[in-house]
Figure 1 (spheres, one colour):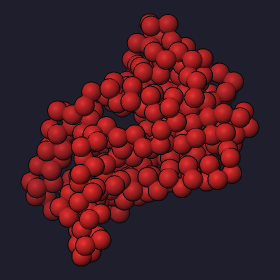
Figure 2 (cartoon, rainbow, N blue to C red):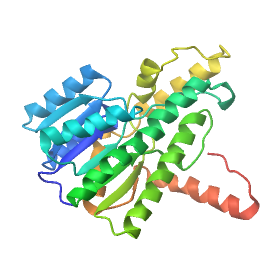
Figure 3 (cartoon, rainbow, N blue to C red):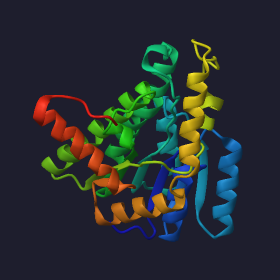
Length: 275
């Protein structure tokens, strides 16, 4: 789709992958509505883009709350008069063994990582279809294709996000909708998702086992992310995918070997390979 002069809404747009998308979309001549809970970071990102001459606005938004997602859509239409691209990008995750994940954390992670995109589709799709053009992208994860250890709730939510977008794209094509869909499945990206998740975690509780294993897991995940791909590179990849109407957006194609091994094992003997 054409991007110059179009309007994009990005949740989790103040930092990380969301900010990378914002920068890439701005370079492509788009107008931006950025949503985030971190109002300080949101103000910084808006100031940066405004300084570059970008037409950008911001809104505090908890994507786990339908009324706030609806308010985001209303604010976007009020400011720009249209919405051409929605990026359901806001996400969180806490590395914890499945047996130790508190129910409150299950609900919180699934509310943000799965219900957030569901609310985004429910709210923005009718707007796009009425205007006759649009693209909805959701940030899932390689975790949405491979269920690794220590990230049970995150894996469940991201598998759901992948299923949501594959089903949506098939539905859109089946009824010849003018709207397209795509799913981003990133590998390790240099973001602060783990640190931000701890900051916004509702329970603020320490691990139930009080062991060092969960703390080490979290540190290991963040260390891996710190060495990951630059979020700006991810933003350019997403922009290219939207312009080309590409469905699967993969930051680390080499990881597809893990998917192939998993499928081969399923067909061969029903076993589960090591992630």
